[in-house]
Image 1 (cartoon, chains in turn green, orange, yellow, cyan):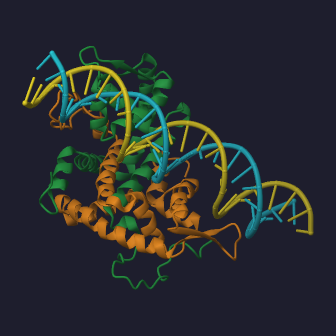
Image 2: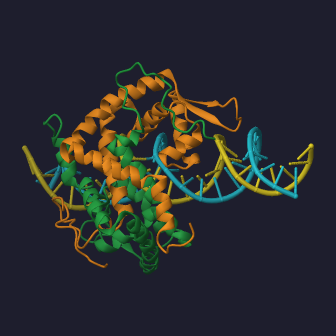
Image 3: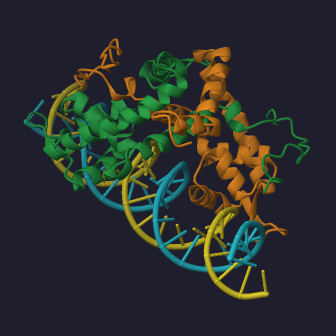
Length: 174
Length: 174
DNA sequence: TGAATTTACTGGCATATGCCACTAAATATG
DNA sequence: CATATTTAGTGGCATATGCCAGTAAATTCA
């Protein structure tokens, strides 16, 4: 199986919308980001082992813990997730008793997300495992470099970036 | 390294949903990557407009085009995707007539993925739109910096990185 | 050469994530 | 105050993505 790895000939492409040869992730920022996220996700997921949870769930439990008792909306915003997507993602955690949704007493539209005792315990267990993946990543990538990268990713994930992006290009925007 | 710095002033929107302490993405490389990927995904998806397709599908169509007529396996490997995940992701594209799976004549286990004429046309249309998002991203992030970032993401998505990661840590196995 | 193993894909199940429509509740408006 | 509007969540539908089991075909081996 060495014949069909990554061809380059094929379609002599007569279109001018042709993209420079190579792979899509070598020039599309979003494709590159997704691809790297998939790889990292697999690596960190592996570290979660037989805990029954994945890296995404570790992120969620951790962010809930770090946020105190955020509202669903606030948690979604900070995670840069659609509020309904977050709602769906929380379901299995609620079903398994790791998380609870508690209606606010001051605003009946609002619900606060909080860890149950079991959820907090699980988060700590996962943190132990996470550190292994994190350490390995940094052993390869470099601790300082990793910190720098996270800074960049934080920026790309920020509302500030989103605003600048929308304002850019044509210069109009809403 | 339990340093709790980072985060200068979380983008606290205009509501009272301010997040207290640090955020998971300021520590976890994987969480940060996923969050940035979500944000970028939303931005690039928006650029796809009413084409009925998303950025992930643009990536797929583009990579198929750039690869020639890759096998399902080869495409999955290059995209750093599970082969079955790729199979599922291809279904809507096949259903909509943009992609075809053609059994190999030399190895009956294998199927080649190829764009139909419609798929190729769609890919070109999407490329036009993609360029808008790409240009905006680079207007904010910087063209050179973006290229550098893609290089880093490419590395993190590479098998080379995966091997180093697995070999790292405790420094055994391999 | 026939059995054991590996490889490539498929289908099922589960989570991740987004959009839209809908409901309830809080707010702004006249 | 009554109504219009905005805000927070929920449920449905669709794609994204992964794991596992099963199937078929190719390859390795005894």
